Image (tube, rainbow, N blue to C red; front, side):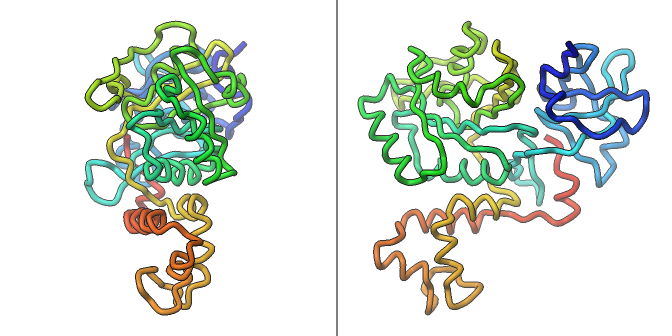
Length: 330
């Protein structure tokens, strides 16, 4: 069997090769200027064709992308990135102008991980969910380290009541409790992204799936009950059952970028009231005829949730057309 098909290409398809000499490949890891790839010839490395750095229309590949490569001695050349089914990006944390940073592409599900200890943060979950919904993939909330929580079921009830459209599961990688609940999302050929802050247990979860100590993990810190961050780069791993998992480093900053649709989906209750405001440009902060403030005063909307929505909406960045087409180099 073609090795590339084991990495989802047979179910993805793709456009015809621009030139007969090119081969399709999938990016499985990113190391600054160098990309790990898998193609029909096996696993290797590639670099971007030099002219792409100066092409304003070029899309720089990220983990999960399908690309066309020119085989050659040493590293292959990446000639073109194929169209993406789903795409995940954030505002460049360096703050250098209006640009995005690519995180992952061509995935089916986003596992949003948060641990059941002091790390649990509903506001952070809302940010992750907005990004996941914008990507076009199915978000799933995975509550990790259930072995450390005496009230894991209470967390499940709180999140399920808040959002009945997003599946929520409680698991423990340490004793494999609840892991079988995630099996429907880990079918052969499917691609899942793991998203979460540092120390939520992404590496431990991968080790449980792999059945070995594949990823280095850090011990829980006693001062804040958080695990030590161990993943240092984005990479794709193939599980024994054939599913593909994209592991991302824990991110201190996850700025929104071109994410209005995701925010509208995640805060659909607030958006529905906002559409009823007297003024189209209502900021929901004291204008007459504001349906959002009216809903807060009548106990229909949670004031803190509305404040967080407004904060994310203010942070949201819509890139200029040229920047949006180019994306940024990760």
